[in-house]
Every structure is written in structure tokens, then in C-alpha cells.
Image (spheres, helix red, strand yellow):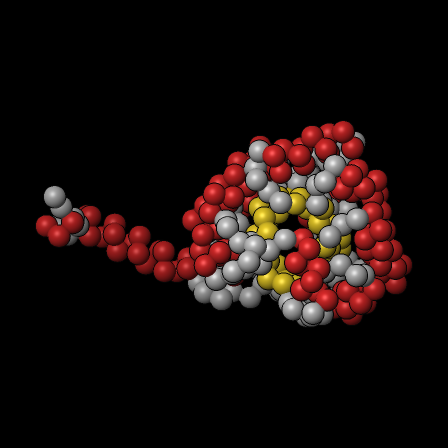
Length: 265
């Protein structure tokens, strides 16, 4: 398989080939997802909840994303690798944004970064791209703004909200983003945005008309141990299988049935 790049994502949109994108936080998962040719791996700040056990994504630090990006890089050969910039790593000014984002590329091995927000971050996007750092945008339900939004709520239901998101998409595209995540917005709105922009849209809880889809890998594997949003399809329930395996191991240890001669030197 050829290496996926930001240019190839654009080509995929042009030929109407859907884009697959999953979160990834470690080496072994990167290797597995490469074997099935997932197009894009995102070292998401969702690791705060999935890996680190935080209530939300806000406590995640630059060093957390950098650490996991390095691990994913070692297992990734073909997918486009994107580092998700955590809360307050790019909002304090262009200089700090440049410093933090450049570390993801230079030290972490990422090939692009993702930042949340609309028109207000356009200047930062332009500066990053001037420094040759590809940027993926993210609008709609932005988890780093959950306190402002009052929780994880669908965005863009009202006419004025929808118009603002359409304008945000236009401004971000003009600023130079190569792709745009649309999260938690009505399908009709995501269809309109996707039609109006020339870059790939990646949906999560935004319906079927986006150019691609992204999910948290642990959600689709049934590994999060928590309720999942409406938009998540669980393709398997590995939590149940893990519980069974661990329970069987414990039972055999307690009953001195493991290890047997077969598993001894």
C-alpha cells in the first residue's frame, strides 16, 4: 500500500473515495490498523478519557500526546499520522502554538496536527501552515469547549448556529487546513458543508454525507466500559471476552491448574 498523505486525502475526495480514520494511542494498535489499511490514525486527546481515565479531555498535556504519538509512529508505516493538540496548547498565541505543534512533527513523528475551533483560530492556522505544519480543523461539537457548550450537545440545530459553522468551515479552508472534522452536527448541515468546501470532511456523529468517518477505536471495539454516543457502532464487545479470559486465568491460578507442564521449562 502507498503511504497516505494530505495530498492523497484531497485526491480521495475528488474521486469520491471515502476516508477511514481511527484513533490510535500505542504501537501494537498502530500495527494492527496498518494491516487493515486504515487511511488516517489520530492520536486523539480522547486518550485522556480512554487511556488516562480523566473525566474529559481537558487535563491532557502536550507531553501526553507527544509520548503516545512517538509510540504510534513506531508502529505506523502507511496511514497519515495526525497528533491532536490538547487544550491550551495553541490558544495562548501563535508562538506557543508553533512551539507545541512543531514538537509533534519534529519529535513525535506526526505528519499533521489537528486543532479545534472556528474563525477565531484562522490566524494560528495560517501561521502553522507558513511553517510547513499541515493542519486538520475541527468544528461543531468541540470537546475542549464542553463547559462553554454546557456538555456534549449537538451543535448547529438553530439557523444562526448552522450559518456560523458554514462560515467557520469557509474561513478555515481559506486559512489553509487540508481537512475538516465535523462533530456532533445534523446530517443535513454536514452535507451542506461538505458540498461547499473543496477539502475532505471527516464526520463523527455528523451523518453519512461526509467524505470520511472517524471513531474512537476503543468505542468500536467495546473496550471503554462506558455508555457510547448514538453515533458509535460497536463492531465487537472485547470487554466481555477480556473479562472471560481474565476470569478463567484467575480461576486456574487459584485452583493450581496453571501453569501446567506445557507452560513450564
